[in-house]
Length: 298
Image 1 (spheres, one colour):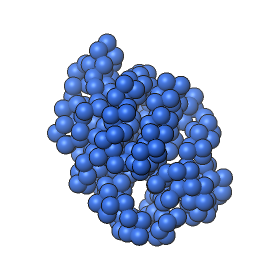
Image 2: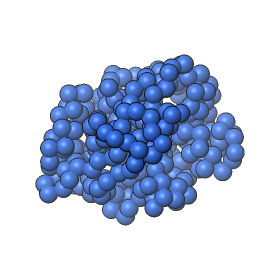
Image 3: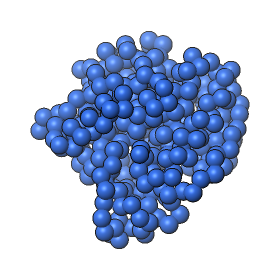
Image 4: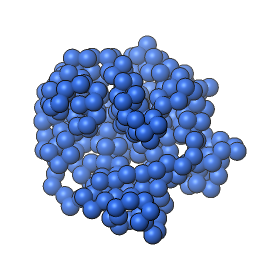
């Protein structure tokens, strides 16, 4: 199973272009949360995927759990926490299709920390672990995340790292997230970043050079996505692929769709790096599909 460690939450999306959050006049509730999105994308791509995390034991939490179950995501390591509220994110998109959001609630950290008693069982069930820097921002969730990574490496599960830098989780400053991510490249089977993340982590100003640098830092496969230009892969397999041309509505969740599909396609190929180039086209297609709708998932 591909075990995704992280959050599920509710995206409240303004489904029209606006310049800022205060210009929005209505919001539509949609399924969200980076690692929940990854788990669903992996499941849709044909992999066995599970989510290790939690939400509040409230109406929104029940709504998320039902949606995850409907998508075939394994929920053995996901719980609804009594007395906690499921976090919500208000999301907007500008005229260029670029999305931004503001998360309300601290339940992400609480949700990840709650996985601790189930962590060894989750990693025992894992063929691969997917995680991001989002769950490194506070001490308790960082402890669980780093322990999950350590267990995965000890037990031979593939470690799949998507830095997914979110400055709002780091006090508005992306530099600590990039620094924390830099320390976790070594030992990863695959590291997936966007252009800006690759440059920040690798410390070079060209995304292809950054991909080379990520591989040199210890990623078996380094994948850097380039938006409309597609993606590059470096390391044990070197490849590039263009992105499908689509009319972009919103970029929200495109990276999550790509990551989930990428790891599912790698799993289908039994993690054979000689065939890794074959995974770029379906992963980019999933990301492009996400860009044609307001929410990460339809």
